[in-house]
Length: 397
Image (cartoon, rainbow, N blue to C red):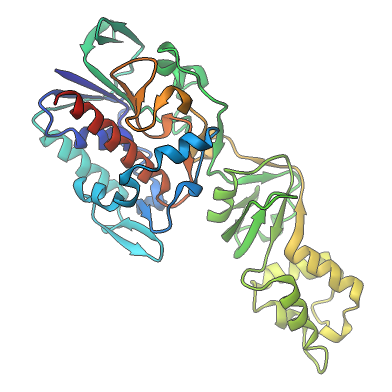
């Protein structure tokens, strides 16, 4: 028996390892020279593994009900067992787990060595599958003017993150499309935001803890925000890109203190020579509070008693509800993952098997599901790889 795993990213690598005890040949196809290339970059090169705070609410799909059903799997709560099985050792930094070595390249190389030691595994680099066809109860994979036959196929080709020029949507999702699957609307997510006529250019490089949200909705993300020459980035912004709609958003610069509390604390200092800059410096770097003061027409030498209500209200609005216009996501070359993919309606989410083609399975980012930043997508890759591997193993019982 032969099983094809198409794609040697996180989901493909994990699938192969989870099948290590199966009495079948496992052939892992990767079109690039480097296996697990995206995995080598995760967590800033330290490798994000998983997160303590993890639930269905941390993932996004056009099919919410099916997304929730998929994540009812026992492996969501037992995800640490999956990483133990993969041999990935990690340590906790608050809610996020990172590789114990803090070296993503070393971890990927270890995973690849583990696959190469598997008696049933065969890694086949620089091979791009050009076609897939059903042949009786098997599937024919075409590549390099050759054809090979497989009983099972796991498609783990990822989404549209362009580490290299991988082609357009029709090329990246070519195999699912050839098998008759629907690809939902796709767009880059976990990506920085670009702002037309970026008002922050002069303070690029600054970071602060803030909040970013869609205007008129409850969707918001708190955390570290980085000001860039083009706009804004940082973990909170990357997560926000998963829900961002339209071309405007609101940015708040103060975390842990609501507007009323800020107002009370501010006006308590009206008596005496209390400078506005000293008060604001408790919440943000000097360059950032100077930017706000200039925008509101308040001198850096002003005391709190010098500020009239109009200027204070402008300052309060800018600190908590600054509206940014002309905002858009950066393109796929700057995105960490893709929103959209193979429609979950066409997948049995309990087994990750295609409803259209028996013995075809999906794992990882290729399906219409994406998670937040910080280990969520690697966890999803591990969970779906395990579900698919178990389903294949059950076929042989």
